[in-house]
Image (cartoon, rainbow, N blue to C red; front, side, top):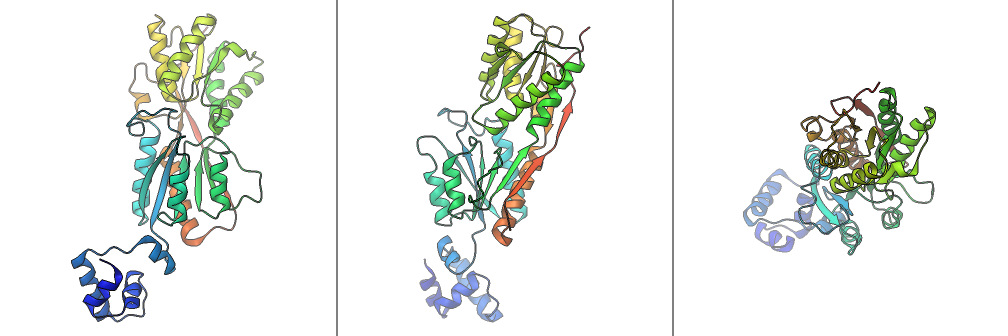
Length: 345
């Protein structure tokens, strides 16, 4: 069923159907009612590109989850303590604003081709990229071509010719600094750090925050006390094993995500050590399970809901009102002290 057939059944012109579908005012109430009844009866849905040609944007946005966990594991989004709540919240916030959400997982093999097609043919009017590495050129190409995008966890771009876009981050350096400072204030001097993915902005800035706190306290930064854990539970598990095998002096660990902290806790317990009596540990994110594990996890709270709200509302404003210049948003962090960290004498 197409608009030509709907027009014939309703006894009106094709342009009248187009006006009604696109909610133009210059159609009589009687005609509008009759055409809408035909549309409902035959289940006609206007094509996205046709609506765009008529000057209407499509009320569909994309959430593009990029390079998740570096593997091909099925159900990897729904199992993620970060991507799953982010996506669910995006759907809810978009719905409140009258938008639908199309979720797409982008892997390395197919790169960004699927996202590019969805944006170029106006299936989605804009997109939110989450999980991408820092300074991904494929995303920059989309911005330069005029696509309306929000990027989560991305460095502020210095290229003034890039084009308008929106970035949303947590205050990564501040949060990591406060996590490490908390352990220092508890008397710890031999503090290790399990980094996140160093190709991602958050991984880089959280390492920087750890180093800043250590330097300010006059504590040495030892290479063997810094291990990359890639933001996964297994990464945290393997990193903790490596750290504690090679350095018996470590009394505390700051992990760059709660997911890695949970993996580290498992490794620490397997090694016969007690948390926090032998090792204190602090995470980052305050995912839901952090307060329920044993011992409950001291962490840096970042409101995912706040980040999603800013991302979705900013994107809708970008689509409907446009923006005069690029925007850079940061979400504050908060230290949440629980059972996994302890003062030492």
